[in-house]
Image (tube, rainbow, N blue to C red; front, side, top):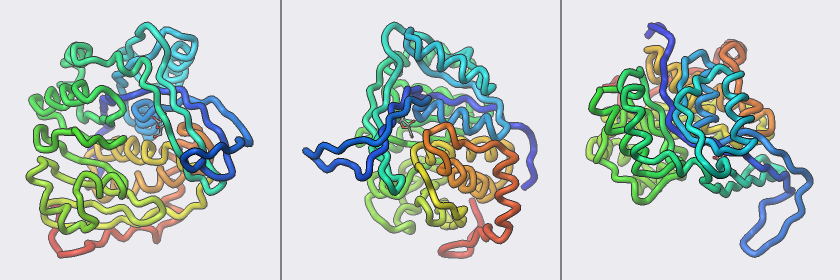
Length: 320
Ligand code: RIB
């Protein structure tokens, strides 16, 4: 399907300051390891995804909360410079959210998050954004916020028939699957197994209706991405790279996917863009430093022209 228009997207999500240590190996429980470096970067799943979508050409409004500290001020200025609409970003008393991240020599990571100001995105403040959410083309969310606030935003979108893309990360055992309608659910392999219980795409497919999910996208690191719909399972090859740092790769995927899907192209094609955007994002350290622009992804896709063969994994049914 050809591009129909630029995507206007509302992202509801978290903003963190990432404190990143480089370590040789990640600490086991009870172990102390020495870091070889420390960096302070902009992060948080909501802001990372908003930035990723903006760099793919979408018009993005970010709904979230920053602290009234210097980090909060710097973060707002940074997002404005990047072209993210910050008019729905509240400033609340206290510190901006913080993530403590360790990255090992293989590029694997461990993350501990302090919600901080993100906790200020309460249900009443989400309801105040009703008119913003109800008119957007797509709503993109994650679960690094109070759950009730996320659910309120999805309810508003459902009532207004705005498609919802949920990257349910970090996954939560208390998410009420089936209470709200989700157009596209994005999870990694581990998260998929935790939500769907079985490591078999055929079984995931069969439980989509009960969970009111139209499509499930499962990212698998360097392996192909699965698109599971009610009638078929497709796979879209990954873009080959040697990662330096995978922090935020899932956010680059979700943001890029939303930007391209929101343009009206087929889901397989949007995943092809997102796979490439996520792969390129791992070539620099930091969640936002490596997030590619549209032209970078386009060039990489062209250079890897043999990389797309969106083949059905099982069954021959087209998407429903
Ligand atoms: O997905 C990566 C992000 O998770 C980091 O930027 C960190 O802030 C945590 O939210």
